[in-house]
Image (cartoon, rainbow, N blue to C red; front, side, top):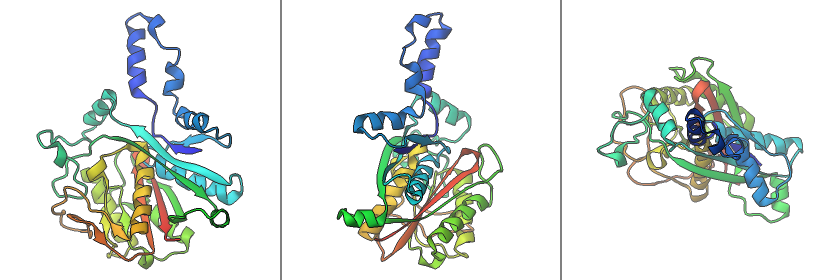
Length: 308
């Protein structure tokens, strides 16, 4: 069981530290510590399922869920595990989370039109919307899946991870880190950029991230990126869970041969324009797709999936 989680529970900390600050230590819950330790997310699922194998989390900011899936793939390759449940889970809806993001000027201020607030790659984007969610994939070696006649939705062929090594919060302006991670995933999968039929972008709806990611895609695909979608326009930003949820999106896109549209997209900034799928789903014949995830500290993780 490998789950991506980007942080501990700020909600728990605020409540319990409030008791301590008010001089009421006896009101601090004896479960405050285990409720706030990030590794307990994976542990609680293991307890529920009775899964007694390797159990831990990956924490690479908003790339955590994608990192967990990449690490799970490596555990299968090494023979450490035969089946791995991998994904991510997180909620950014605690008041302290929202307050911190507001202070960083990362959240949209479009309060009068909340349904239009998250606008990945749109020229009028002004920040993301915090959300909560989870996704878990069942990973195993292809030969083992065939042997037990499992329904295989996609193959995880490539994984790349890098760090911008640039700034604690801001992405490297030209997207070099995420581009390098994407190229690493392509090499890992022995795929050329021309084979990629679809990109599921990180697309946070922030000015800097979307611009850097657009530049990265032009860098990788020599100025001609394949069709792009960004689910955060619909689901918001689920932080450490985002990479896992968007991996599921990518797998389903391949399975149904359809790219879902990006919500609230009308027009792009000039320069480094992308083929953004918007308005309606786009049926597309494709054999492979990539999904990218980026996070604070310059964390980047890219997964490459192909049809079975």
